[in-house]
Structures are given as C-alpha cells and as structure tokens.
Length: 149
Image (cartoon, rainbow, N blue to C red):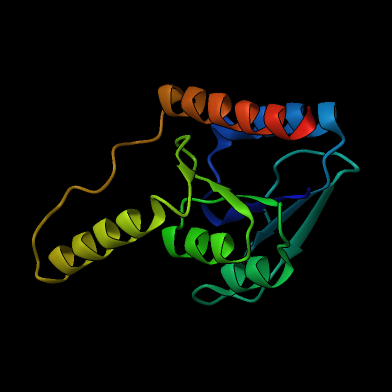
C-alpha cells in the first residue's frame, strides 16, 4: 500500500500526524499538488508538482493510484474516482469515504453547489481545527492499524 496526499489544500495540523505514521510504518508517500508544498522531510516522501489547472492533481492521483492504496483528500469527486479503482480515501476531517457512502456525499456536494450558484449564501464549511485533526488522526491510525496487522 502507498499513501497519496492531495496536497493542494492539505491542512498544516495534519502534517505531523502523517509524518509520524509514515516514518513508523515505512510507508511510501506521494504528495501531489499544483504548487510547492512541504509536508515533511523524509526519504519516504515523493513530491510531484503538476501544471496549474482545475483537477490536474486529481487526474495524476487517479492515474497513479492502485488497488489498496490510500488517498487523503477533501475532494469528493476525487474520492469517488479513487474508490472506483478499489483504493481507499479519507478526508481531512476523518471521514472515510466508502462505496456505501460516496454517492450520498456526491449528492450533497452537488446540491450545495447548485444552491451556491443561485446566489444563496451557504456559509461554507466551518474552519478546520484541532477537533478535526483528532478525528483525522483516529481514522488514519485505525485504517493503518488494520492494514499493518
């Protein structure tokens, strides 16, 4: 299993959590973004910068991901594409996307996008905080524990 990180909006609070687990498990990690970002310094990290443009990082992740890999992303359409390749996806707030729940997430995302397009103010998601980082850490650690045992 390899770990992919959709780096374009990767929260700083998650970086030490990921670094710790990657080092502990010796997990090959590929960070893909359309700009230079830094998650940590490890020989296990490989950084790939793609061209600017909508979904370029997503396309590269889908191109590279294989069955059983894990992708960290808050992008629901990307998570759907990852699941179609029989890989796994977790978002920044600790939600694990599954074949059973991804269509519901896509429908809600599309509904909110439609509401925003009509000019309704939706307020957007709440700011990312330590509670979210803890939820991510718990889900990430649980997932990795199942895979490494």
